[in-house]
Image 1 (cartoon, rainbow, N blue to C red):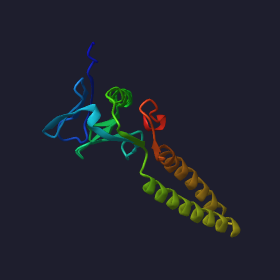
Image 2 (image 1 turned 90 degrees about the horizontal axis):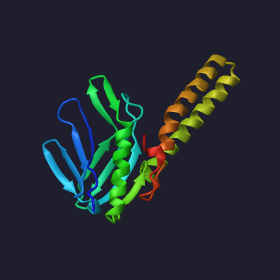
Image 3 (image 1 turned 120 degrees about the horizontal axis):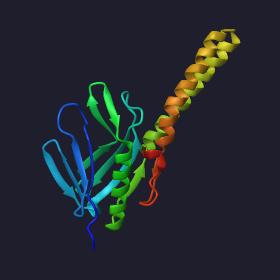
Image 4 (image 1 turned 135 degrees about the vertical axis):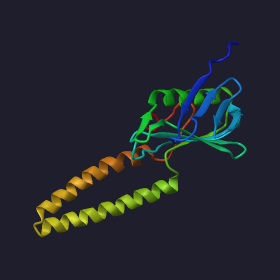
Length: 190
């Protein structure tokens, strides 16, 4: 049987220091960062959680959190720091790496727990908070219209549209979900 090619992925988590490097090898997931290195057999990866995690410098940032059977954790991020003001997206490389990781884990017979988005409790709390903010904004809008403050009402409508666009995408992509190896949620990949 022919060995599978090694798939590599690297990102800089900060401006200072070396890049975090990951290789998908025949032996497992090889990782190297912060002066440490190791190899996790694919069958020993206990869980993967994919999520959408935008930050101020990069609106399209995705994250894969891997948990080993020993309790150790690794994070793989879809962006890399290049300068003090620039985080570069690595969408294609990240997608290929995460997809191939899932494929190799499936071939190794992994029983990993595959989940995506936020945890159910965190998500429910966030949705409840958004509902309260929405009710409050609706109340302010009604009050502004009732007293004839049309400029204030227009501001509230514009703010609500911007808020809904920004926060709505985050909430939609991070809905809690479990999935199988062959069905990675598209919303959680770039």
